[in-house]
Length: 190
Image (tube, rainbow, N blue to C red; front, side, top):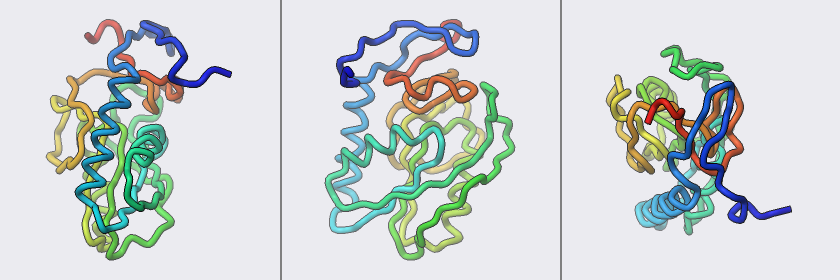
């Protein structure tokens, strides 16, 4: 079995009947995630933050981010739905899985794959703040700045992108494409 970094990069592919081309390659992603991990390690030195991953999309980013953090940290997950199998957020956010950990008095970092309208993140921050954490931060791999409707504070942003439909590295199209090591964009959206 080949290791992930030895797999060849597919410059284009078809998922769900749509043609995609590479947008961010795995090396670029890996380097930026390492930088974010270093920032978090510095900012939370002497503390033990708990990273709350937003399922399903953030699992790959969260795993790599945790490996880049060189201080003690913990992890838990919550799950929301606002997309279903669509390319555009429905705007209706539903909580499908609550966190298991007690976060009262804890330093919480919500880890998300992508922030577009901001509605999901606003919903998450409202829920998390009700548990009275000592601090509440947000790390997102991608931020679609042009799609933002609700201004939410994003403390750690991997990449600011246009309002593009992207898949790979945990991001999906009808649950497909999450396993791709690179991030792709629909060819027509460049």
